[in-house]
Image (tube, rainbow, N blue to C red):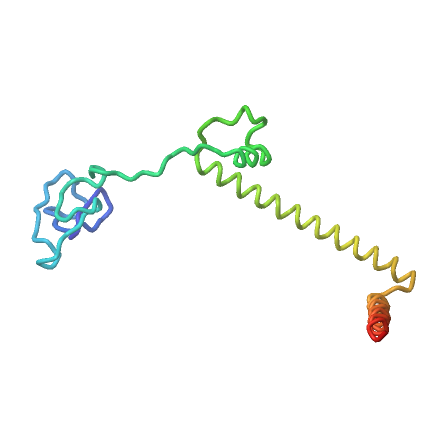
Length: 163
C-alpha cells in the first residue's frame, strides 16, 4: 500500500493512506489485512517469526570487532606504506579498514618493485647476450659442446667398462 511522506511516495505493507498525496504525514493510517499468504510465518529483519521487535533488539547480536590488534607484520606494513613514522607511533588497536588499505598499498608497491626488477633483468639479459654475440657464443654452440663432452665421457665409461 502507499503511504505519503512529504512529497515522496513509499510502499508500506499493511497500511493504506487515509489522505490524498501531499497531505501531512501526521495523519493516521489504518492497518489493512496482511498481504502474506496464510500459514506462512512472517520474518522480520531480526529473524524471529512473528515478532514485532526492532531488528537491533535481538538477544544475541553478532558484531564484527571495530578494531584489530596488529601483528608485527602488520606493523611493518603500516610503517612501509607510510601510515606511521615509527613503530612506537602505532596504537595497540587499529581499524581493520586501515590495515586492509595498508596491505593493498603494500601489495601495489611490491608489484611495482617486481615490475622494476623484471625490466632491469631484461636489460641485463640483453647486455649479456650482446657480449656473448661479440664473442661468437650462442646457446646452440654451448649445447653442442656440452653434448660432445657427454659423448666423450660416455665413450670413456664404455671403454673402462669393457676392460
